[in-house]
Image (cartoon, rainbow, N blue to C red; front, top):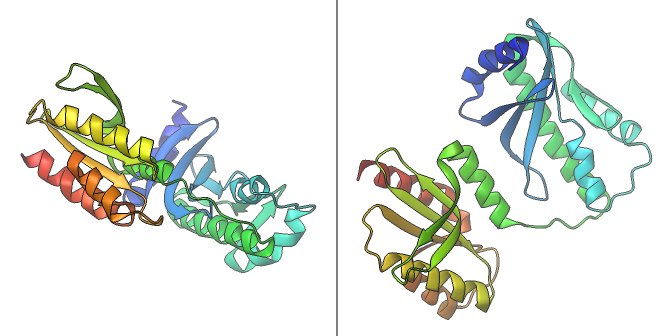
Length: 255
């Protein structure tokens, strides 16, 4: 890692550790925050600069959100600059950015840019009457990655029938236990496939494996389908997934 980028990352990480994940990308340090775009993607802010002063930017993602949803923006800088200036921010070539500031003030710049990027994207969606889409599988994956980092990954687990089953999110803990967090789509084939997979894995009676199925409760589900999911594993509505998964993980870690 570039010594300067490592210095920036280390200096900012302490103040941001509870609200963002961090990675070095190119010539900057990128933070994935809890702010969410209308597409349900998480807002990312990149910090660049030297050892003493830095600036934060959204790298054009807010405007990109609107463009990818179908907005036609002939001069986004002129359109949006007036909305950003009261927040002490500017925009150039569609990129929202802060002024240069001392390195120790970077967490404030990250928060300002992340909130502004989200608000600008929302304003553009409303202004252009764009429809937002919801990808709860991606949202679940991003939450798990943010919370558990490299402890979570896709995994194949063999059931009692000796058939391998693929799971998108399996959290592994130092005590050797694993927690399956499995999203399911609201259609018969997905429901049946996930129930069969969970039943087969559960039938191994492996005490190191805990299983959860997550469904998107923003959609309308029939009681019979939810009851069927419950046969496979404990079921979690997505709106409550953050708290429920955190509590489940805490129990698994001390088991």
